[in-house]
Amino acid sequence: MQCANKGCRKVLAREGMAAHISHCAKQKVPCQECGRKVHRECFEEHAAFICLNVRISCPLGCGTNLPRLYLTLHLGKCSGKALKCMVAGCIAIVKQKDVPRHTINAALTHTVLQEGEVQRLRGLMHFQKTKPNWILEEESVLSFRWRRGRWSYIRGPNLFSTEYSCPNGNNGGRI
Picture 1 (cartoon, rainbow, N blue to C red):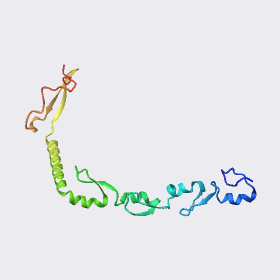
Picture 2 (picture 1 turned 135 degrees about the vertical axis):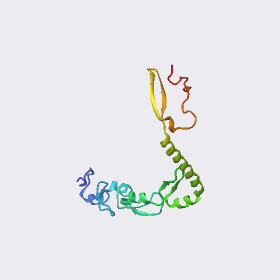
Picture 3 (picture 1 turned 45 degrees about the vertical axis):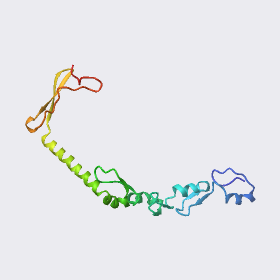
Picture 4 (picture 1 turned 180 degrees about the vertical axis):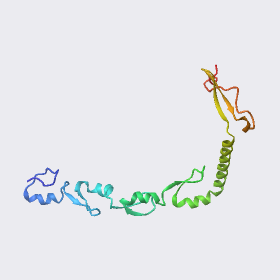
């Protein structure tokens, strides 16, 4: 007599069939967590990686034990999640739960970085007010030069050079 489980090709005497069915790898058994029927041979994999109702520990080490179904939601707000410091220029990456401690410990460094950022933004604002209007003037097919418009808005040294050479020895397009 052949085993009734789909995929099992074992042929046994009728007397041995009950014992075989209780251990057959192709027998479907219900998962205690989700109720889904899973082949006995796949049951360990189902419980370890697939079943959404199995409770697991947070992989970030915060100590939370939750159903796998909620893991993605938890990781978004987990106190063990690594975050980059929000202060421009600070390269620290700390766990979410350690952000307040980092903010206090790095206060002096953050002050210096923020002052540098303020200066950078002031420079950008100044440049936006005084930026030159550059116009490309073609002199020939093989040569061109940049001319600056709006001279009245710019004070300081000349913004153009009469010489330029590329690292490869080219003279910058002029022949």
